Length: 197
Image: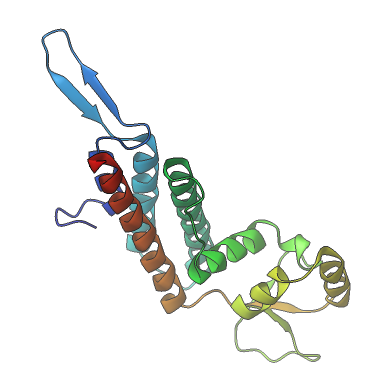
């Protein structure tokens, strides 16, 4: 957020040479400036995340809302990546926090690509025999490093196993938000430098 409590991404449209900026001049000489589409998309996702976080919380809806939040954060990651690559080709560098959100979104959207269970159990403190396989950040990082053949073997090993899911902790989500803000700040600074040249 900037000093006016606007999403930081809105500052993107203030750079005069930013990709997609639109200035309309009317017959009477009046000019109107419009947000660049990428900035509007990023701001819309930031506002939707804010709305999700402001919803009343309950024990029942907590898991489902956590999944929705992670998927919305992945949309934010995608918009930021696309904006950086469109404005400054090849300058997007995925942080560890960005990778974590990408991995979780992949798992939440396609759990059967990882395990044969289509609906995994939540971590609820129950002990299973044999022990449950936990899908957590460490598991997804390990999975991401495997070759396709190794993934197939691991998936076969997990067949018919009890699987629990340990969603990212608050500090991991905060690290992603910090990373996103840094990407946007870098983009704003790059656009400002470009407009001076």
